[in-house]
View 1 (cartoon, helix red, strand yellow):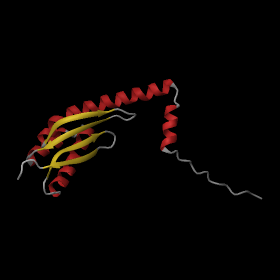
View 2 (cartoon, helix red, strand yellow):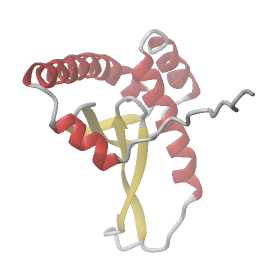
View 3 (tube, one colour):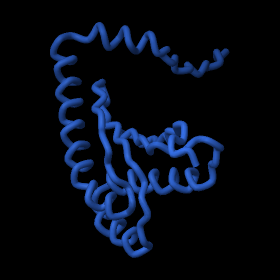
View 4 (spheres, one colour):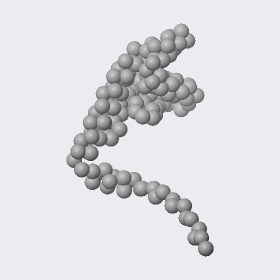
Length: 150
């Protein structure tokens, strides 16, 4: 007589369990993670800085940026959109073809620009576009009260 085999389901850790596991890491493992984070930040910052001239040409002027530190650090960049020609956009795409971070930034900024042109809220204007430059880029449009009085 054979006994049926039970497939062992992998148990998924909760966020709290992951955090406790990270907190319990020996000093050397934590130092490894810290070094990895610093290396990722350096790589991301280099690609980010290299992308800025092409992004400016494509119609996105950097106003300020922040750096968020963590296991996976990220740069949070604030851009103000301005008009750019199709030729400028094509040139920016070409300039960013070997810069994955810059190319993905341009992609999400373009998609955000499409949304920005569709969203019209009386009394508000788009103050800036904010993009999280990290493993998975994310973009936010920030609106504030229109102070022009128009």
